[in-house]
Amino acid sequence: MGEQTKTSARIAGPRDGGENGSPPVIDAAFARWLADRAGQVLLQVRAEMGYADPKALKAAGDQAAHELLRAELARWRPADAVLSEEDDQARVAWQEGLARPDRLGASRVWIVDPLDGTREFSEEGRTDWAVHVALWTADSSNPACLSAGAVAMPAQHRTYATDKPPAYPPMPLESATGGAIRIAASRTRPPAFVTELASEIGAELVPMGSAGVKIAAVISGEADAYVHAGGQYEWDSAAPVAVALATGLHASRIDGTPLAYNQGDPKLPDLVVCRKDLAPRLLAAIQKHLPTQ
Image 1 (cartoon, one colour):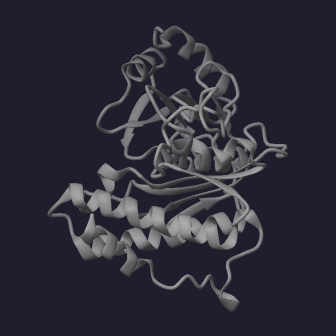
Image 2 (cartoon, rainbow, N blue to C red):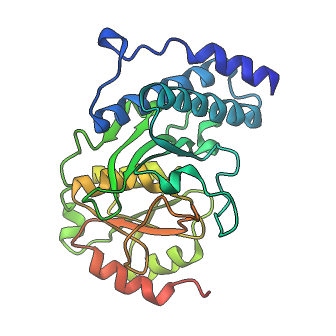
């Protein structure tokens, strides 16, 4: 860890946010700024370390981005709580009788994934990895209480964020004329029920990397839907779901119930994100393939 610490400290660099050395004040623009800064750090880690040791590269990237996000949030949003994938005990579900995490009593919580898609990040030439930054607020009118979010895809040189959400994706000609819909799926381990679902409805599985990149593909219109079950946490989906909802897309659990964030148990194991015109058809078909409990 000593060498990794030196690397992350070196590449974190100055924290000037732009004009007058400060980041945007508005939360949505701040989320974009923060995700982009972490993305630049990750690109530097890749450039400096290379790909000879994928395990070390993954660890260094996670650490460097996490430290950058934590430092900037402590500096610019000191009163807000934070839930990061790389926090100690982040995956531990709170139970009565245990010390209650500060975030559960907070009105504002940043939910971040410093590096979504570590496998892809560690492979030379792959661009399907991301940085997630989302803000949960107790008084949000958003159904998921996500008031801001940004998904940076540094190797693709693009960021989707709620300050300037993309336009609602048009229905592709092929889908509009009865062709197969495209479902973004894991390139290495697509859930069995997603494969069965695609076969039943005549969908095409489009393999790609991180969860954020998959949801970004739906936001951009490169895919029609993303369906997942089998294990995720709040930080895997909070930021891309915030942008998807701001875009006007459908996002819910696979049983159709709303997505909920900043819960005592950070596990959020399943979701579906798709164009609204597809939601009734997909949700109905999914019911036949729900994993048995």
